[in-house]
Length: 133
Figure: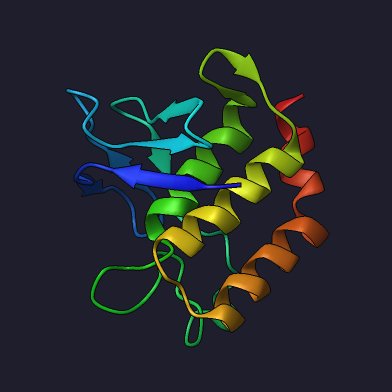
């Protein structure tokens, strides 16, 4: 899978944990395999990566480094988990998790971080995914 992330991310910090995505003119979106477009709607609320607080010193929720590397892919992952939809079509949990992984590849996240996060969502993501159903 190939994911390309476009646009500038504008956020408003809400409550110490959640962020409001400000995407009024749809500048922030991802393209999956040159076929599927994932647009994050203006007003979408994210907590970035749902990493337990115990691990924040090595894997902070919005990523680390100068560009919060895995922050943008985590927003797309949150959106897919909350809606189960991309480009007007229902998607699987595996698709959502693979978008996260490919988005982290696009953002050049370190290999150990990318695999740690991906394995965690594949192992523990079933409960939050099924909350939507």
